[in-house]
Amino acid sequence: MGLGVLGLSACSSIENPPPNPIPSTRSYVAQLAGTWNTNFTLDTAFTDRIQLSEIQTTEKDPNDFYIWGANKAGYLALGWYDPKTSEYVITVNTKELTQFYEFSSIAADGRVSGNTWFSSERGYSDDYAFTGQRTLGTASVNAPRARAEAAQLFEKLKASRR
Picture (tube, rainbow, N blue to C red):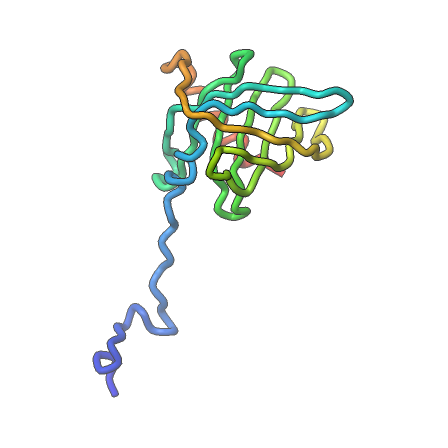
């Protein structure tokens, strides 16, 4: 029997399988849009308010998306979905450190729980449990400057994540 009889083509043979397309992360990243209220405890309880609203794609990969905005102190915040670990990641980058929030799913009501940790020039912190709640809304940021800063920071943080 020829390949045509089986309905197979040469490019889908065992020796030459078709390439697996890399799925876009846009639909996952879109779920991060809104205002996030986060809570975690070290020695005392901490809260933050993070607003994410503008979705961008990377120059390296048009299927790799991230979203950016700011936290309540005005520091740049980024969010993305990592298909390798099946985790959502939100970061807040200050001058001294970067805080990572990682979670695997977002409930229908916007609630999340996961781990938060810190990265600085001195290394990584321990993991701490956190909870969060997303509400819909938009952030307003100094767009031209922040957009360029967000693109550079996204590439750096994604590459340096532990």
